[in-house]
Amino acid sequence: MKQFSEFSKNIRAVDLIVIAFCAILTVINLIFINRVSSWHIHIIINFLIASLAFFSAIKHAKENSLFWRQLHIWYLVPMIFIFYKELYQMIDPIRQTVYDPMLIQIDRYIFKNDPTVALYKYTNPYLTEFLQIVYGTFFFLPVILGIDLIRHKKFYEFDYSAFIIVFGFFLSFIGYILVPAIGPRFTLHNFETNNIEMPGIFITKFLREIVNTGESIPYGTLNPAQFVQRDCFPSGHTQMTLLVMYLSVKFKSKLKLFFIIDGTLLIFATVYLRYHYVADLIGGFVFMILTLWSGKYIYEWWMRTKKEKSYLQ
Image (cartoon, rainbow, N blue to C red):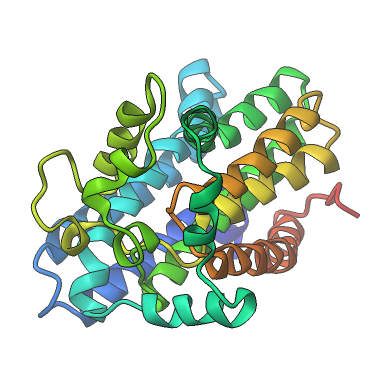
């Protein structure tokens, strides 16, 4: 009991869910050991990430040196991308299907048409360029919020925000496993002619290639729909952007107006640029609510375990 008390004292709530998610992914790999060819590599990676979360937390608590403090805070950023790529090696071998037809039918039931097709008549290169740039800001929004909270010495607020954002990513990853999908740019449109149909001005094509490469379809990939990540439902862009917007308002960030404006445009861009169905956005909103609701209980439970007063009350 004393050892557990010492453990809980040094481990943040966000470290706890990182370790738990490593365990969950390891179990899934072991269950589907005959389908996931790189299962052994995944298990090693999960062990290393869990170890990093544990030891950086311990070192930060005991030494509080600049190195361990910064490592303990920012290891979360590359970790999300590592998990994202691990899932790439898992989802298709495990599920062996995509749910795009179902998501298309949901959109057609709601709108009586395909939103990405309907929006095509309103496209122009300047708008496309602007929204492609906005879409690219997604990767920086959580980091910008974190830096802003730390800069204004809102350390408790940062701790909770880091937990909620990482927890949100993990829930969205579970969503990808449950409902794998590739998106309208492959199913309703011709991916190969996207740059011709929706050109930008200067850097749209370059930014698209960055996104494509991140989704495992670098330039020249044959049959990209076969290799792209199954990461459309829920819309992580919608879920995580809404979480950042909510947290920025809740904790009175000086940049909340930026997050609200940029976030609203970003969510619209996911459909305009053909990355998502509207059904994905609805899923992202539902997962955002689920993240805040369940995350608050988990976070406060861990604070009670650490015998620390929750400032959320």
